[in-house]
Length: 149
Length: 235
Image (cartoon, rainbow over all chains, first blue to last red; front, top):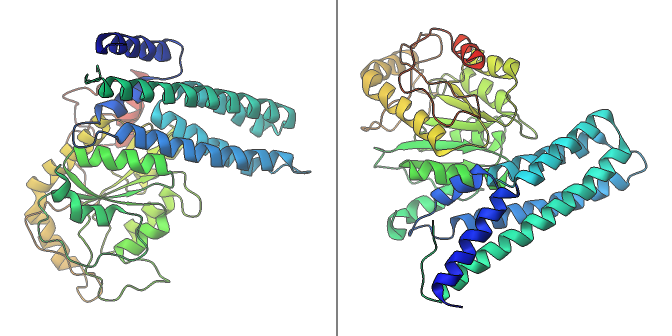
C-alpha cells in the first residue's frame, strides 16, 4: 500500500474511533501535546493506561471473588480506572466505570460483576483499536510519509 | 525542549526517593510541584506544565509532597536546600493523604502558606470546591485537565508575581521566623500569590465546568470565588 492509501486509512480509522465513542476530545488534547521533541508522548501515556488497567482489572477480579465483597475497595479501584480512562479520552471505558460505581454504591454484587465484564470488554476493545492506530502510524512513517493531524 | 537542556530536569521529575539537593540557580521559570497518585495523570500534567514553560516536580502522594517541601514530621530533611516551589497543583482524591489534607498542611505552615495551591478533581461537588477554596486553595480544576486550564493558572500566577513580588518578599521577611523556614532562593523568580486572607482583585476565569471549551476572556472581578463559581453554574 502506498503512503497516500495508508494515510487515508489512518484518517478514516481514527474518525471511526471518535464516531463510535471509543475516543473523545481528551485524546485530541493529548495529541496536541505531542511534537517533534516528544514524538512518543501519546504512546507513552497510553502504555501507562494499559499497565494501570491490567493492574486494576486484576484487583477488581480478586475483590469481587471474595466471600464478603469490600465495596469501598472495589469503588476505589473503579474510581481510579474512571480517572485514567477519562484522562486519555477512552470514553466508553469511562462510561462503564460510572455505571460500575453506581452498583458499588448500591452494594449490588451482581451488578458489579456485570459491570466488571463490561469494563473488561470495553477496555479490550479500546486497547486493540489504539494498538491498530499506532500500527497504522508506524506503517505511514515506514513508508516515508507523515502522520496526518 | 531539546533533550540536552531537559537533562537536569529529568532527574527532578522522576519519582523521588532521594532528592536532588543541588540548588537551582536559574529560577526564572515557574516551578510547579504536581501531586497525583495516578501515573497516567502525573504524566499528562507534567507534559501540560512543561509545554507551558514550567519546571515540574511530580510526586505520587501528599506525603512525598511534604517530604519534598521539607515539611514531613517523620523525615526531617536537615539543611535541605529545596528548590523553590512557586505553585502546588494536587489531585483531591488520593489514598493516604487527600489533596484537601495536603492543602491544610501547607496553609498551616508559615514557610509555605504563601504558595498557591490548585486542586484538581474529577468530581465537581460544589461543597468540596467550597471547602477547598475556604481552606485557601487558589483555584479548582475539573479533570481531565486541559492545556487551557494550565495556561490560565500560569497566566494568573505570573501576573500576581510581577505585581506583588516586592510586597510579598517584604511580608515574608517580616513574618517568617528565619531560623525555622527553609532558605529561600532569592532570585528573579516570581513570588507566589498573596495569602488567602487578602482579597484578590485579579480577575479569574471560571474553571469548574468541564463542558466549557474556553473560559470568558474578560471575567469581572468578584470578591468571593464561590460566588463566581455559583454564578458560572447558573449561566
